[in-house]
Amino acid sequence: MAIEDNPRSREQYGQELKRRREAAGLTQEELSQRVVMSRTHIAHIEAGRRRPDVEDARRLDQVLGTGGFFERFLPTLDGRKVAEHFAEAAELERQAVAIKEYASTLLPGFLQTPAYAREVLGSGHPAKSDERRDSLLATRLERARLMDNFDSPRVTLLLGEAVLRQVIGGPGVMCEQLRHIQELGESRRIRIHVLPFRAGAHALLEGPVKLMWFEELPPVAYVEGLKSGRIWELQGTVRELEDVYDHALGDALSHRKSLALLKAVAEDYEHEAQREQHP
Image (tube, rainbow, N blue to C red):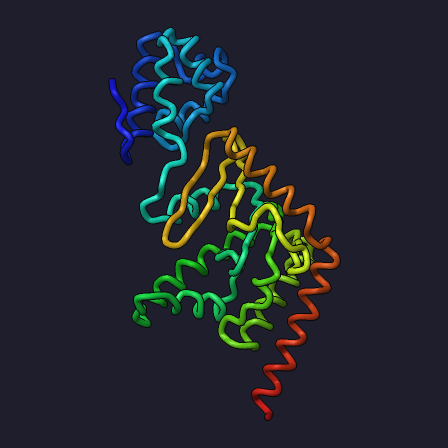
């Protein structure tokens, strides 16, 4: 069976694993014990939802006697592009028990206030109708429910200082947004670190990244660009991105100092908004 590098590749890979497992007379549980993987992970691979890393694939080949098949076709699944570039990442976001994210210019969608999100979604080219913008806004606000559970996901937020300084929607909107993040940090719901401009060149200059961990499945990384996004599941690549994130985190302000900066910038926006209302 040849696996094409197309949207069905992962599904086909999973179907082949199921076929060869059943040919060997093994249940998912029996296979999981022999290859040292969770039964749930095997079920997700067979359903086309996840992929093994290279060591997993080698053990599958060894146990199933498949002559290197699963390792040989593994590269066709690496770094899949997402057609609707955030759709799959949003689903993974809902499943995550821990998230570490670096935002360079905009706050992550699940942390945006309605007014901030409305301005972001109303920008861009071509222009969106009010109806289209409001539909997108409803979806984005639904993502904010991710924060309803105090314990999960655990969130570490690394913000470029430009996120604080880029005025989205005016000083009043920015004041409300920064105070929302400040409150989440002060309540210990999220951990916040700001990368100040004075830090200069840092490891994440090339752009934003989101790292996600799960109960039983391997971690993944999501890297986003203009109208594009890529999910990385290859564990070597995910570990490299974790290292890059941690390196940049070392250049950031502490949680306490970051909260103080958020508070100070929010107060500046509040005073500016008052001046605009009462010139």
